[in-house]
Length: 489
Ligand SMILES: Nc1ncnc2c1ncn2[C@@H]1O[C@H](COP(=O)(O)OP(=O)(O)OP(=O)(O)O)[C@@H](O)[C@H]1O
Ligand SMILES: [Zn+2]
Image (cartoon, rainbow, N blue to C red):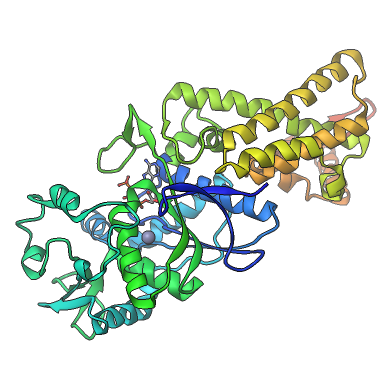
């Protein structure tokens, strides 16, 4: 079995082959940092995080780079509206990006280049484009001359006459238009405007255009040709088309062998977006009363294959939460009951994996990352475990041999992890709790007993609550002895 992926460039599902055996280089277009991330952003980064995890599961060494666009009109506008600076706005929403994605169990990239840190690479590329006749300076700006690049349109499949139909009218009046030789040309460098941040360049002070930053970052961080370039479907044109035009004109090499694009999170069939005002931020949803758990939200995204649209409705979120409860129950069973039976996911060997489940999971994922098919494998495993859990509670024993249950559970834990679904993520306090040593717990119990003797009940209660918050329950026995119990979630 080989992994097949739908390549936007060839408009077909293709077997995946990496440039270098065993290694994959991925560049993913990151957020423009001017606001909190909404569910659409969440979907995009969960999809690519899952691709990365699956490649790792298949034994590839993956190098994953994702940028932050920290120079942009949207950031400048937000800074003006809030009386702040572009740097402060960008810094704030870079941090909130990290917070939100950590909750969704999106792994951190190997490198996070930022436009403001890539100016040298950007200027070098523009200079090379100018030298090779693809770019021209005009009144402090520099433009890419689209018609010079014979393959322009190859990624999006657009022809010039179709593009013209879309672009005419709207752009005609702008000051930028009068500086261009052709309406299709786009800015590589924009001359400085008063009160805006700017950088020195051979064409005068100014700032880079959006598209050139990604071309420069790919080249700086990953090289001239990479394996996979990904992003949302709205980036195919013009952003990725322009990246191809910029990079390939300079290097003469393909920028990326595979171009992957995720479908949208929609609301009533329309793309969730800032400009339409129909968005829900990740944090608002997770922090709302009766909001879903982070893993339920991740599951909501993974229920659809990455290219398909997902409509966001409260019912769909509630249903994802119910599905997550089923998976969570199966995962937790092994963590709880496994204590008694001596199960340990850390100690497991790959021979403990159930080969049939693994084969079914891989078959689904190899088919253009069919996560909904992969989830079906997880539900089957979880349901089997949950059934046995009930038997154990009501009948005192399981029907399936614990050794076999262990394999089911370990397979469930492993495959869930490939999709980034983990129970530990739900219970940060429990994992902190498990770090308290027995001696520390005994010492806290002794301190509590001393406080009670001294009739300092407030302190005694505080000590008990403190332990409880760290996952340790105290059980006072007749005769003054206190037992304790560590929670395993
Ligand atoms: N509704 C959505 N569904 C799926 N992916 C999305 C959605 N909205 C944005 N994305 C993707 O998220 C990534 C980051 O987007 P970016 O920061 O450019 O968005 P934005 O312009 O701030 O958002 P918006 O589209 O809401 O104005 C891009 O790959 C983009 O395609
Ligand atoms: Zn980009």
